[in-house]
Image (cartoon, rainbow over all chains, first blue to last red; front, side, top):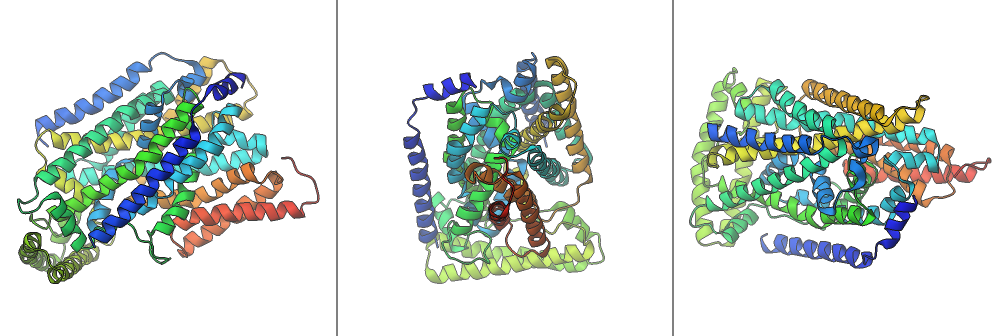
Length: 41
Length: 557
């Protein structure tokens, strides 16, 4: 448990930025798919 | 298949299985066997998670779905990125902190052993049956199209999976999945390129999309609030979210993949890889199906793609009726081809109307053919779209690449089956055997027992596959089966995480009420299957919470 705690503490990744990027990428995709639907319908 | 195809197929499968078995030949003890030594990097985890989810059905059925109904199925995956974010934020830190081998271990610490065993059993029931379908579904299609024996195809896939999964455990599964996924992506990319290359000269890529749109196949997103539609943005973002949350957060076949990570960071990045790439991957597979549709507007094709169904009709007393429909289809094809070429040269709204009308007529001809097949043999699968993509591969890909694409399909079947039987054996070992065994076993003995359990689950999956009946819609059958149990399992986990005052007795009542409700809804087909996940989960949480309010005795939490 201690070892895992240490691994968790060592992690200085900016997770909020990663999660934000995932949501942004998803939103862009939905926008693109909506445009495709509209454009080719 | 030619000799080159056989060499490519057997070479690809042999190399991957040999690699997985060789690289994991040394035993790392029980932790190594069940958790892969906890040293996997994010890319291996990411590809392994993707390979576990993407079964052979994904690569056979999905293009067929797009051929028949367009791109709307993509919306089923819209909840996935959000679900993965929730797993990264809530589930993974808890699993790591408690150093669990299976997701269900956590439930004993939070509630009691009964809840752990019930959820582990629900997982084993649904995943055990699904493992059989995962092997059976591609085997039936491959055997019909290539003329192989169904039983031998099932045995080939099943035995190859058993070889490396038993021998190397979780590490072998993850390592082979990495290469299987690489072969899959490469093969699908090549198929896509060849498809574009074989379009008529008058039809560019954008022109093909335009033709697909004119035939109602570019319906990617539907924002309407129509609950009778199976796939809309809203059903994907709600029902799809719950399905994905349950799958990635509580299904041991996925939990085991990311718990093999070197650290929380690697596990999270592996999952985020899927949050980013899963929808684009599905989009490309569906687009391949749409392009196959456009391609077949210019190339002659049989009225039905399922050779076995055609043969059934041709050998029955309805032979003449079927022949009439086939003739009608051939004549009609020329008319359709001319109309599509005309639209490709100069698109107008009036011509678009013509294309839509022609597509409607084409569907009606195919429906008539299916009806004749069903009259000839009511047990014959009437779903023809599963055979569309494989027909294209076999008829239009050059020698060698046919073998590669068959390797893609078999690799996909193997990778998801391996993940499933690996997880089933871990759950049996950790949540049942180790939990109740009174004798302390050495590490070697435990590894050996795990290997026997993996072998047992592998054999059971083969037996299920051999005794499976034809299911109408292969890809949906797996999702429906999962959705019947997933809602309840997810409800238990979310109650554990977020309703801190609810104890084991209350959640037990919640499980019973939630699961019974889903069974009733399933039996009466009251709602679309994606909603089972939402309803099952919500009922477990609400009933558990209300019961805990009326509970006179303070409960363990």
